[in-house]
Structure formats: structure tokens, C-alpha cells
Image (cartoon, rainbow, N blue to C red; front, side, top):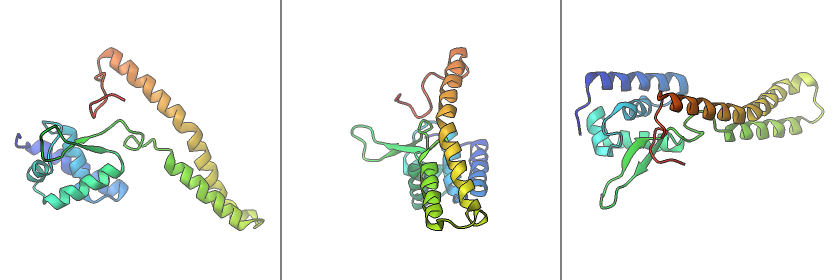
Length: 172
């Protein structure tokens, strides 16, 4: 494993601060994601990540667990290896911010709240009604957005600006 450069570690720290500020993630989660985006080789063991980021193995394992839940990283193990390797995964709707399930859940919860309120005055129902309308709007738009990204990505691949294979390796 190569020793990470100061620039790579600084970038990882910047990503860590961004994810902490923007999403409330522990800074190590963002640091790990930032480092995985620039490290060489692109797949690293927990021990290698711990050493590179000057963090405990448990801190790295906890960050991996968070990122696995959002499908932003994946673990793999080569035949004959006794340890997992972690790499960035940027192909899933969850990792790209296009997961419709959270909006489906929001819609369902707001409908439940509206049903519970029954014939309450419009002012009392307003917040839930707007949340439900927003969720329905997003649910209708995300598939269009995804298709737009697929077409845009294909155009970038055709010009050579992006590699044919998405980050994270193996095709779908």
C-alpha cells in the first residue's frame, strides 16, 4: 500500500467536514468516503484504511458500516484472502441520492397523518398536505432524473470524459 499524500489526506478531511456539516455523519464517515475516492489501489483493507487515515480499526469499521447502509461502499474478498477489502460504490440509487424509498416512506407517513387528522381544518392539515404533495412530486421526477443521468453519462462516455464502466467496478 502506498502512503497517502498530504493532499489525499487533506481532501479526505474536507469530504469528512462536508458530510458532517451537510448530513450529520460522523467526520470519519466522510473522511473514509473521501479517501476511498482518491486512494490507490481503490480497494483497501480495514487495516490499510486505519493506517492511512490514522484512525482506529473500530472507527473505520463503524464508518464502513454506515457507508454500507447507504450503499456508498462495498466489501469484497478475493479468493484465498482472509480479509475484506472496501471500495467506493457509486452505482446504486442510494449512493447517488436517487433512492425513491425514502420519498415513498415520506408519502406513506404523511398520508397516515392526513388520515388520522380526518376532517380537521385545512390549516391543521397544511404541513402534511404539502409534505405529501412534495413526496409525490419527487417520486414522479426521480425516474426522469435517473434517465437523464443515464443519457448524459452515455454522452460523456462517448466523448471520453468518463470511463465506460461506472466507479465501483463490475457492470450491472
